[in-house]
Length: 278
Image (cartoon, rainbow, N blue to C red; front, side, top):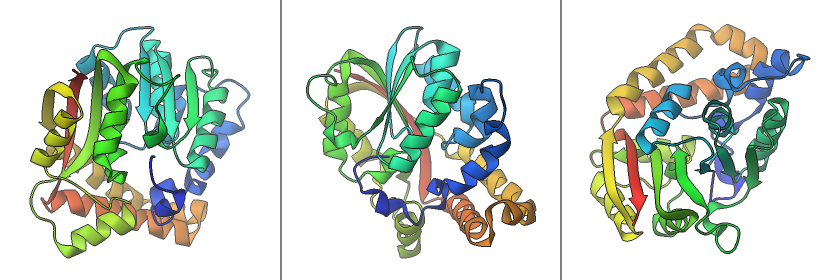
């Protein structure tokens, strides 16, 4: 993630890594190297896993050897997949120390440390020598929703890219005025204190200097996925309690149910955005 202190995410069950470590225990005891495919069920914190990344590669026409920066890289799953499958060089930027450390651990176990550089940092501080104008492409998958300071963030994103460099973002946006309950759920359970509508989102990107933007609503694509995730967790709840304990399993179920309800309610939508540094 980016910009906020990690305490902001204390109530967001998805980022409580105990459930990830519990699920990974059988894999981590293996003697042979892991692959990004082995980790896909556990290290992709966005929707639709590797399919979403294949889509991003196609949209940006990413080629082998490209320099890609991932803002809010989470557990590093997207970075590892792009490095292995598409032979890119990745810089994975993550604010939360726990996510960053596990990301580095998993990257090492996959033998991809030479292609994936994990950086623990606030994205709003990524400027100056070593950062400016270094990357061919920028991706950010369901991370920008945590960052209210959009003007600053998009300025940094622009500067990270080489001239004519491209970006791919997956994010939430508002489709109608939100209710007080929806705003509370977003802030308290999803760590999303601010969410713009399409017009505001586009304007912020344009003012940062991005051009040739495409805006593709992904709500209908994501809604069945988040609904199925919640339903599957509920069906296997007893096993989740055995594996993670009642408190964490309960928090995860509440998180999954809340996200499903927010998207189903029509006030919050999903979007895929591409564009180019002007």
